Length: 312
Image 1 (cartoon, helix red, strand yellow):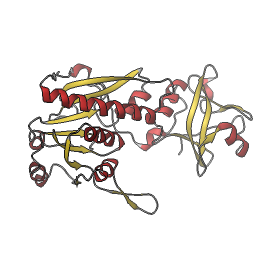
Image 2 (image 1 turned 90 degrees about the vertical axis):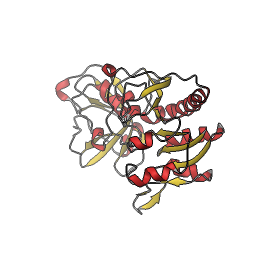
Image 3 (image 1 turned 30 degrees about the vertical axis):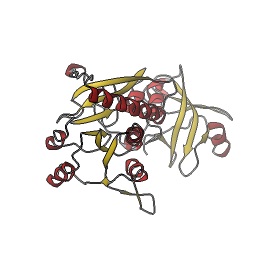
Image 4 (image 1 turned 45 degrees about the vertical axis):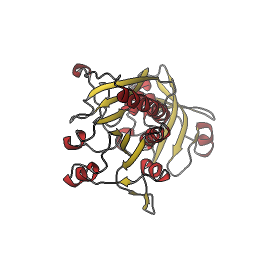
């Protein structure tokens, strides 16, 4: 097929690579504008732009895809289909209806569950046993179009947002190639979404990482994994921020001491929560490297009775 590809992060770049390897002709890659990053504010390309340039594919970076000139620009490529994966902008109906096969979205959840911007992280945070990828015929709504095909992915007990991202990226790449083949040979089936089963996965914001120690330990442990690698889960230790990258759930304790360090020795740092306790395993103090809790305690002893704060 002659494809216009739209996407921005690594998840999308893997799908673009799979389409190229499958022999499809990608005539244009559409991605978000370059953004300055880091202290030096150097310009950073999106993962999709980098992948496209590596394959000598033309790149288009509109600030607002809904501007009339964008539709006119895309139309001249006469694509058979547009493949969209984590693009980051809503397409107008003029573009949705432009290609022969319309626009197909590769979405990292088992629709209609987890429509929206952050389905991967929420699957971990909510403790789901499985998730997956859905290919969908796009319409004017947000992830509301007819479903085409699905593939399921099981979550490991220690799954993080980052590790699940990698699993779903690979699954999505394979599913997209399969779906396009079935669209070409006319064997794909469109299934409407059950609106009564729809849930929304809102965008992840940095302040979501602030740990509320009155919450149950199991819930907080899932938050730690779901927000790894960004924005991470964190708390205040004195005047500094302490990121928590890994923790184990323990039973028992006194919920009235939520946020209090109840065990601190050479190898253990245990914090009381509103239900159960968290044994911290991997942490990162502000300005320091990420490290096992044993190494952290050697350089920064924490007394039993210390209270972690939400004031970060």
